[in-house]
Amino acid sequence: MPTETRDGGEKVVNIRRCACVVKGGRRFSFNALVVQGDGNGRVGFGYGKATEVPVAIEKATKVANRSQIRVPIVETTIPHQVKGRYGAARVLLIPARPGTGVIAGECVRAVVESAGYQDILTKSYGSPNPMNLVKATFDALEKLRTREDVARLRGVEI
Image 1: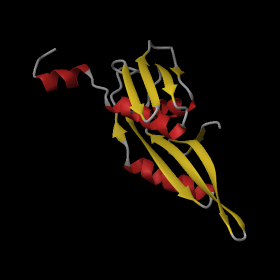
Image 2: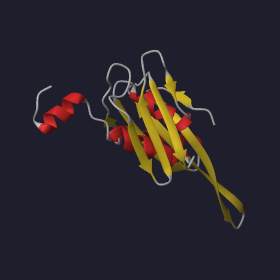
Image 3: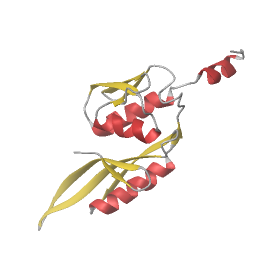
Image 4: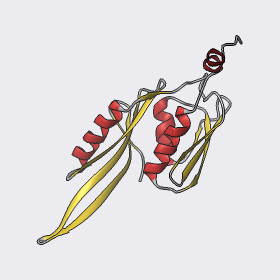
């Protein structure tokens, strides 16, 4: 499913249909996974469920707004190589030279582009589940530290 860009920097990563069998037939509901960011170091994801697709996307967007985190950007890439993990999904994020672009799969690409990275290499291992890939990418992004952050934590000067 292609990543769809909507207003406000949100990307719909995945929409799934779920069927519940009832007396009169099947009752369908929809799940939406949305990633939202400002393209300048803030990014979040949300998961919404409803009986109609637009309502599910709207709910997921509200959750994405509330769950935003700040990530460090060094020039146009990440400060260092990092691994993220959630469930059986594993994601490796590698800094890249300017001009490389975003080399990533669909789910990881949505997260790193929304965060504002322009040059990054990624590799995903294990589960291809979109929800787990997005959570693994967020796990990796939360581990990122700049040189200044590390120096301040250790109490040394660069």
